[in-house]
Length: 174
Length: 303
View (cartoon, each protein chain N blue to C red):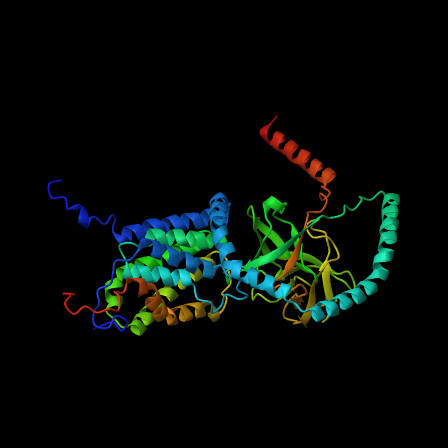
């Protein structure tokens, strides 16, 4: 099966580590915007982490995800380690499934990513309920839905720098 | 190791081992944070590191608001000015008598040999963002330990009590709103002085007045103000308005739902109040009790 965005199996350029870092920082900045109500606002850090874990499993992994989780915890005043645990589990699942997920078209990928994002939110929910919180309502999970819908856009934007130039050289072997 | 694989195949520990390691580390951190508050230094360190990113993220918004402020038309400014003048005039009659009343109050307090109420210092702060945590109600304000904000200080806005500072970083402070589930505030009904404790209800928008007898004299529309007996909040600040009172004979307590008066879901300017004077300690009682306990201990030991 071929992926939609690359058409006939293009070979991508190697990724730049600086671009990966920049995309993570941009996602973090988005998450720290002054939202009035976080319900329905996608967790872009989780989305970008999942993306790089699927596409660059050797460069992005559980350790970086864990550190990003700690940063989210510190900035939001949540239970320290809550986001870290959820992101680490997300990275583990995304890394483990990266071969399978890449076989599908972007929208089919989005469905699988939705499950991953919901799973990480479920971990946070369980942790907070165990720590004495109350269930904040099903709107809590809306952010993951929006995040999964954004997956095709994320795939397009984050893979853009790696695409080969549009000039097609017929004589090139690959 | 004769058959060690080439460097290319080295991938470090297995993913499941890494996950286990980091999961255990997170659980350890969570327990340390929830039970013992040991994780604060690390949290502060990370928060300072993230501060520039936050400012960067907020830059477009601050710029936008500054530009729109700059471009506010003269007509708007004139109208606002006129409104403010009128408001000032209305307030003036109270303000003019305030000085006299304050002096009189002080004299009376001296006569009664009461403790003089210290004028509070207030720190002006602005809400930067609401914490991304649907389980609690917290906002982050742009003043921290550098500006003298301390944990425990009450925070008010133009309408009433907003909450309390629960955690401070050098440049930011975390304010738990009165609507947070874990937040309690001692209040009294303005109309008749009935005391109670109002808690955040957990749904994020309302508060509940718990442990009030089913026949307690609380009615819809009553204004709750801080009673000041906790020594944290100064007395007399408006907190909430009673929205619904359900009296069910099956329960010993009435179910009283209140709506906070302060804008807990708005963003804007707030005042962080410096802490009140030390609450008087119960010297005599605790001293006697302490001595008694010590004596009991000694007698038990057979001294």
